[in-house]
Image (cartoon, rainbow, N blue to C red; front, side, top):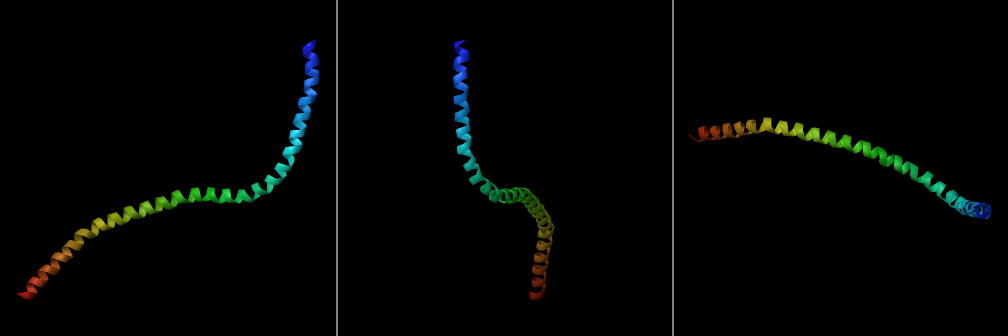
Length: 94
């Protein structure tokens, strides 16, 4: 019986505390709502950047590998050209 009486007095107190808390938090939510509207586009931009950057990284890595392949092809050609010019200079001097 004492438990029911204490619950009968405690529950309205808890209800009052919660309603006071909601009255305090309501203005805070009104203040924070515009901030969330302002920050939402920023987060969308950051999310799109996080999708764009790996694509850019992949493109640059592909470009580097293509350029490395091209340099491996042209290094022997460059050595042949240097050797040919040295031979030409040698024949020209003689």
